[in-house]
Picture 1: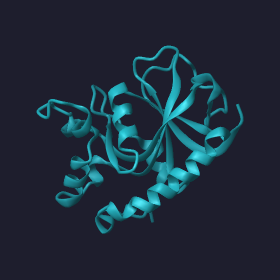
Picture 2: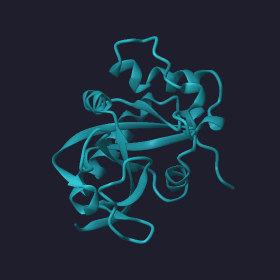
Picture 3: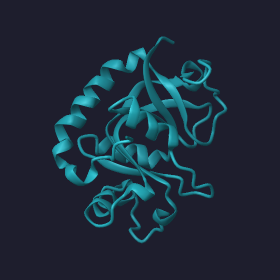
Length: 192
């Protein structure tokens, strides 16, 4: 499969989260990473957003799917590690947008917020007409196919060319709704 030079994150997600993200495709939704047993941060996606791309496509697959294939796309323009989140308005905004608010019936569920290492905000989620098998995606590191057996963690791949039009539209959507970000508080600090 032909690919672009745009970096993307491949990540499994619970099927009910995917459904929720599709219903919320015209607004921001916060997802968390690193809340399970191993609270590693999303270091590479964070670095890509800071230094290389203004937006990062997320290629999502259901957690329970075998063999693995991307079934949904979303775009991210904001990814913060826990220690970067200022208390108050920003922390509350991220919490109010958590996917769990919209996907789970039991609002008293422990969401693992205290253990979350990274928070990423997505929009423009779309289901794909045809799933893209993992082995049709090419890893940035080594430019080799992603394994269909990958079950945990995330991978950084090149965005397939067939998704470039969606990606450009999703970036425009992010820009259009960005007025709903508490912008002055969510500007990421410069690396210099």
